[in-house]
Image (cartoon, rainbow, N blue to C red):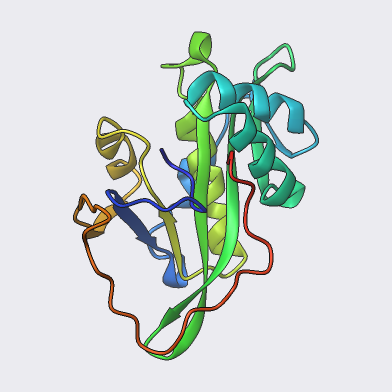
Length: 193
């Protein structure tokens, strides 16, 4: 799965550095007249695209859109008829780097309706998202590809692998040394999420 709030033991993290806008060419943001960018007003359309594209449970999708989704971070593209065909969330985070906090963005839920794939919608939306990320001053744009097939797609936008994690299988027989003490979580997620 691709969600940033889930414990993910096996993934590759991609970065695109946006310092001084040097990796972004303004010429690549030209859109055809049949495609329009919206700063989200169609949450239900994004949820439909998400459910069509990813294998997340309904409980997880509901939790994600209730707790994580922000309208000002949602981007969509529509076709000539005005139907939403592609969407992504450009989430804003602070990343610690050598003792400093840097503004970064995280691309989540990037997806296109099945019948509209292969028409360039996501490429156009990614270019717009990268431009928006650079304009708001983000030092990097990050993402975790949902499938290994997407690595090639994201390389077209100069994303590169920055680190890997190793998948480990653990059993009740493993010990986990803890320095300090345990603490209680104030608002744990429901058990079904």
